[in-house]
Length: 158
Image (tube, rainbow, N blue to C red):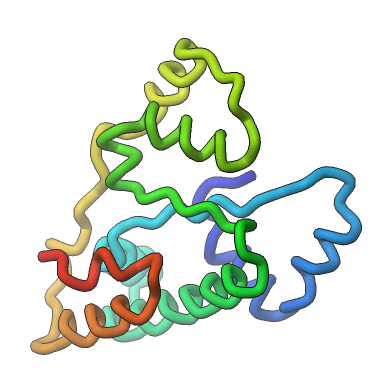
């Protein structure tokens, strides 16, 4: 449960890789990770702006987290559920229904889905346009994105 907690969660898992196994053994109820995936260029641009750092350092931090998520997905298949932010903003009810089904919640009313969908912003922020990307930098990011199945869709995006 959280909002914008990925960086903190990744830091915990990076420092203590066994924590997820211990949680799986000790939690009295099943749990999942919901991995909301924003366009990496927007994510990196927002990170640079929020922290007041360069695009290069923001990219480094972004991919440190990507590595943690990739290891988590490989170690625990089915525990991480991807939600692409652009898909959510375009079809909130459908994406929410799919996510709920993935975690085993199938008895959902249309009214509930509509109420949830009304909380979703109509579009994601395109912060990448406010960043001066060094020459060739975007291509280097795209080549790295292509290495991860959950980010590959952004490797060829404009």
